[in-house]
Length: 574
Image (cartoon, rainbow, N blue to C red; front, side, top):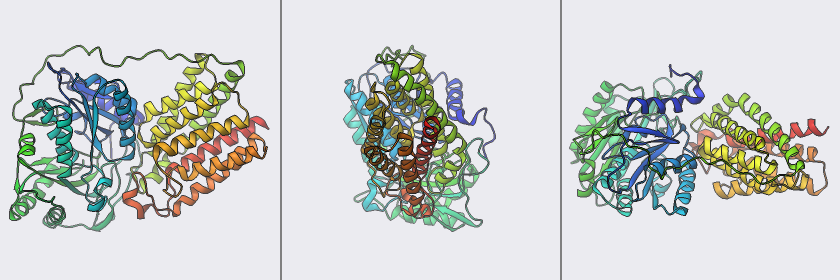
């Protein structure tokens, strides 16, 4: 379990602040993460790993010369928001471009992608390297669908060394993608991890079993198998990785034996002995192998083995010096470094200006805020249940993410209302707040959806027809951005029936309250029916069979939101 916290909701923020205070000689905190304390004397490519918190020393523990220039840090097991990624990039970039690198998860891909678009629009050279090393999460012929787990580290290390050498952006990206193509990881869990303040782990493993094919976001293994001895586990890991040896690869390999949080160093050393022997028996030569905690999952009891097949270039970069708070190799010319003032290019917060609003739109804004407050209350009451549903085949963070998102949305909408904004601007501000603070897949989708609804609502008033058009825009933006369709087992499975029923009822001149009630019933039924679906999108996809019999958490929260607003309208218009 996790023992120490002040407020579970701010655990990730508090940990980052503590890290930056402890290592103030090397790093400084910026909105969305941290960057090197000292900026380069000459422009260099900024290598920026990122993802959810809970994986220390990934991601901010590896900031420093020879490795990362900064790190984008989301909430626990939740991708950072696009705003966070943009903010860290602006603080870290020095004129030679930026490269984001992260594991292959839907929320990370969307949020870093949005940040990339924004940076490019502002004239900053930027690219992305997505890590796909987990051999358990998809077959070799679908390698592009694999998750990124502990193999992140070798990719980050080689990219960081390439940037430190002075390679340009294209060169650093080429190195990262080559390293990823040559990296394979297999892992297993002996026990689940526990969120701060949670009464129990996200998942459990039966006695005498282990969950083979774990994820690093608290996901259980893909299947439970009998618990082996250290030697048997080593043989299984090595066999699986060697079976995926890249074509034309040599025998020299970077090797990581990684602890996920609760496996002691001595246990890892016991496991390393047969791993090393088996690799040498196969003709492979481990080059500066690493044994320890590099990419963790809070207090998960688990281990993973990573191999990266090296060529001359990758070996040079793997063995190059690095100097960071959590990982040090050799000596670099960059430590210690003197503090510098933040660069003028770092983003500054500007006061938001809202469009003039009619009295009718400002009155409608009051109803929008009441509805948001009731949604926040409903999601807060169901946070644990939503997390439990998500933990069956995902990472268990959906409830916390939705609560964090609606809280940020409500705060942004209230600020907009105090500034005199109308209903449309309040709703758009709510979307921006949700996207900026929540992160994750749900953060970017609900944030973009609410903004789209607010843009349609604008200053037009609150007729049933306008409200239906706003919902239609919300659903279209979410479907387009997320790329999901009905049947993929996502929130779209509840959102699309809700949208269709609402539009149909409004077209039939049904009252607003009755139309929303009918639409909410359709969403509720559709959400329950997702229990029979096999996920084709998102973090639950690798654990597809485990999810059968459990509804999709995104669809359930969507139906809850629809039902809460319908209940509000029914009471308000009664």
